[in-house]
Length: 131
Image (tube, rainbow, N blue to C red; front, side):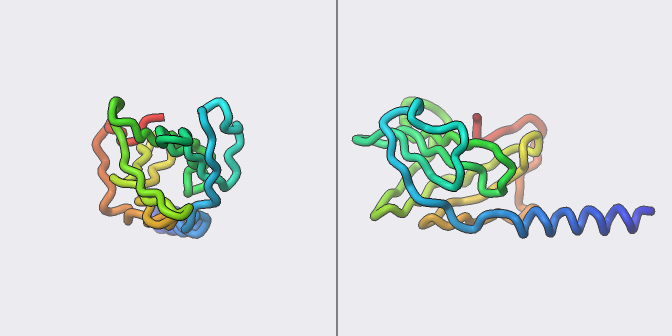
């Protein structure tokens, strides 16, 4: 019985890794959060035309979560955005708790760099990316 559970867990893990996105979609620039549709599709939204305030992306694991990434210095936590010729990098990493999808990744030059599961923090109740 335990062997069957391990195989099922292993296959589920493989499926999760297979369906994850490796690259972000095209950028869309908007002035305010009200201009962002309910369904993000594959797009990355940069909110704030003069000075970016937010980056909104669908979770690249395709769980359906909407990630609202703060760029403003006055709010915490906040991330840093490098934007050049329609290509973005964000740091630090983005991490969703296990209560959500458990995704943990970096965005570097529109590429999603996944953090291996054995490197992911597992502190109960800790959340790095607030929705």
